[in-house]
Image (cartoon, rainbow, N blue to C red):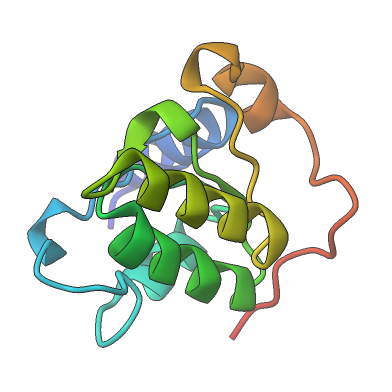
Length: 132
């Protein structure tokens, strides 16, 4: 690898750590848990991701199960209540209440989340994510 390519990759890595970034897992839409039998954990570790913002349909299944698995993997979890839905508003509310209680997800509405501040601040009240 040439020095120019290495310098470019280091600059990209440095910029990526300073800006919020999106890691989309749309290809695994047929899974309840986005971590199970996927390389997502490896990708997130490589990108040095410590917090996840989970959104999507089926808040009471896919989003909830992924939130619990992310919690077990020591991620800080956000599930904006206006960015998830279920078959009924009651099911969505129940799933979000469970996510706040068990995997300790923050369900602040998306308009109130400051993504730049989230990306810049160190984790609060949680241990640093374990390396596998």
